[in-house]
Image (cartoon, rainbow, N blue to C red):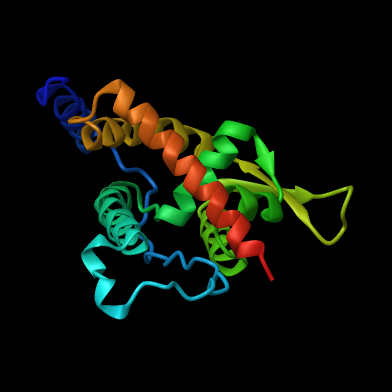
Length: 197
């Protein structure tokens, strides 16, 4: 098991360094909710109602864990950088891939059209991303990080990694690898079920 002080110390150092830095043009923005697309209900289970226990129900556990982690991270991102979770997801995609259309951003972030549109507008208004015409599709456009957006991305990315390290502090490398594999498998299964008629 890894030391409990390492990741938490790294997170503390990262946040302390950022606290001493000049926030410059960063402005607070309202937190945008991230609704998930509704999936068609599967066939009724043969289990009896009394067999249902909310605390043992996997979708509920995933939702609670996701909300807890998102709220924890969102409070830090918004307070320091004025960036919401949907906005950071767009920045992360653009920072890693260079540029993308709104459709590609929706596919990569698994966020709906309205959430992506609002997040992109907020980033455009702050000059953190730029848009240009899509020569292949006149109805669309291509988004990329601006110089200011790239600087902010490079500032937030190490903090994001420090949060992840603190979150997984009590997990062994093997457990972390297994967890990520199982989450990807669960995501693939849910994606297939969502597309069923």
